[in-house]
Length: 266
Image (tube, rainbow, N blue to C red; front, side, top):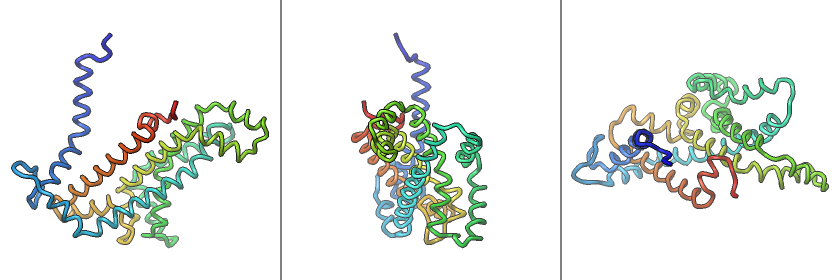
């Protein structure tokens, strides 16, 4: 029995092309030898990859983005795990309202969040600081981490925990040796999505970042406002290559299908 007809295959092919074409074009333009955005036809050049070394602010912004994404995703997970366990396992007054509060950043435009954070951080003296960036990014990425942790928690068999308690294990031992390993795929999936969302965030970060705490997406956004050379495409190609290598390593070590589905190894 054929599971996919010709129409389904054509649709999937068109969808994949639609998703990958912008990435392929950006990487192709990065190899142009000209001083303006154009697709190389006669020859390929590494001119704009070499030019990245003349702009250390982009390299500094990259490491700022990596540090910010790591910090915010780890802290978001630290909040998400106990919150998800409480919301998924217990019934109490205000549970639905609390869940909606944690997920509300998904429903608020990031421009509105950026303006609100700018005003709030200015009043408390955190405007333009790395601490302010971390706080704002935690709020933005928290829903992504929490949803996957909640899904992993809701699908967990609690009889294993009860067995550990009946054998005399303490609450901390049960969490460390039983609960956390069982929900670990959901935690890792939420951490990866939170990291990606934090690293790519630009709309809200424009309002919160300062010259000393500039992230790579914001630096690239500000650069293309005054320049039309292919430098940004070469930087994008490098980020795409790093991401591809990172995903390949995760797939070899853990498995992308397991990670994205929230299931552990069989």
